[in-house]
Image (tube, rainbow, N blue to C red; front, side):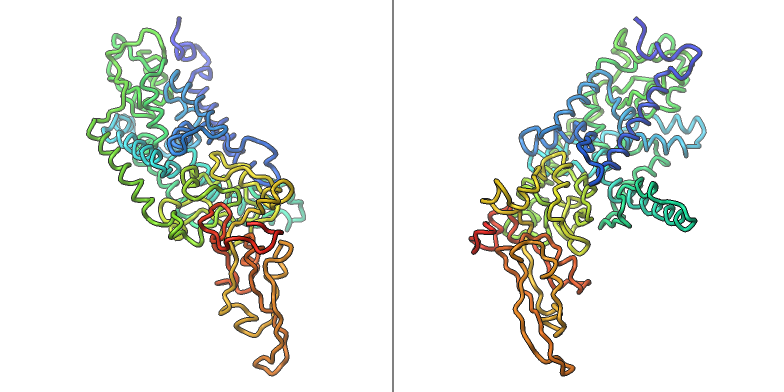
Length: 548
């Protein structure tokens, strides 16, 4: 039987080569990824598997299992990638992963180095073990309840960067184009429908500059070292490399045919040394070396494998392994002891989306993919900064009521969460209606009035905005009226607002609509949120209409 690559490498039609099939695969999966992000919008969701690529990520599956003790819903699909890797090696890295495709594209477009220099750049470097150290650190932290794999997981990075950085830029460009078309008398409805957030003038995301900067930094590092992120940093690639060490198919070098020309290194994506002892854990199965070999001395096969010409396992010493494990053991409690997760000193601004589980469990599940942020129709969900929850919570979703509010009958964030950090809830459960009437509505926090900034309280200016926009019934913001003579000698009736905490659900519309825009006179904090019994404001509700 012929080796798998040999079936495609020969013949007059170069398009039948495996490298051509790989390029088609990369294009297809990259387009599918962009479509998934594009479809994560209120008017498009419709049951599409918009988080499918995250659910196929075996590192997301493994880290959440270590953190929670079980496989959540569709994360078991990651076993498909594990099986593919066991059969064909790290094909995910160079056939499926959209971030890997982006790295390879940038390298292909801008790598103008001469042949000998490219060959030297694609030789294996001993520091490629660093990605295995990063993997161990993250997995040890996950096992201790500090899930931080989303910081460097390539699929998560792609979702997060597309949501907070690239889609707003794209929508802005499309919006300007649509405006120009309208100015010329044309219709712009079709162009608006192409936007990631159609019908929205613009979306802003706090901290998106740094998300985009880190993302682009790793992409631009390809100009210095080809596939820098994939070779030296990627924890998902490290996990797949460990599995690929025992893959059934692999690159096999036929020593009798090899002339040691090193041409196989010209386009070696993984720096896996195909010209020598093939480093099986580093090989991306890109098939470039097979194309470039003038002697047909390389094949991708499960037969006639020369075991003397391969180094199957990652190049990592026992000392490096122990050090990485010890670093993970120290890092997890160091993050948790920062003191912003526990109920004794929780962050007042750590207001989570409706349906979120208790904070410690939330941080065991959330991978910082920001799918919930992408699905949010009002733009109230934002990536957390260091100010809200410290390093452990950075880029997890929080509500920023300075920007917008949580719509009363929206549950989209719970529909797209792939890990259960935001459990799936119905609108009826969110509002505490029907079968959920006894447990009451989901409370995100509680509103308060700053009487030193409130117009009626502090400035003798009539204002009832917060009371008017309060969506619950009976209203959680009520007023007591006071007739007084203002500083100009005119009689005015001041409707001084106060909060009824028994009725408040913390939706934030009062803060979002307050006319005191810089520091709203009415603000919401996380106290009283229903996901934590220890953060209650009231021991019991004073009205059966809003049980606590």
